[in-house]
Image 1 (tube, rainbow, N blue to C red):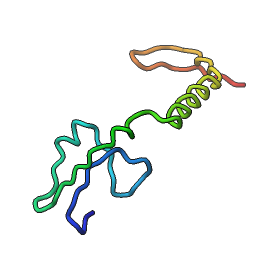
Image 2 (image 1 turned 180 degrees about the vertical axis):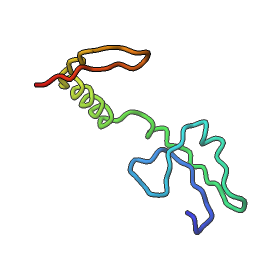
Image 3 (image 1 turned 135 degrees about the vertical axis):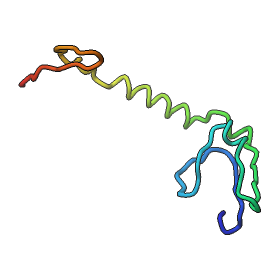
Image 4 (image 1 turned 90 degrees about the vertical axis):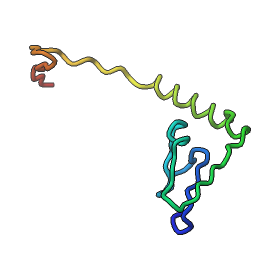
Length: 92
């Protein structure tokens, strides 16, 4: 709230906001605001921190998606020089 000269620190955002930033715990503790500004720290709701059915379903879907990915054949390796390598030109 730039016009109100207030920085609000609360739980992680659930959607993108142009003037919101997600901070890790270490950085959120050390957050300072410009001189003359107020910092409002919102305590997270303990119930909101627990996993929900939607969270578990999203995790299960992500695991299923990874299982569907077909393995990619490694490239044929050519000459090696230090950490660089030259791959032969393979025409299909």
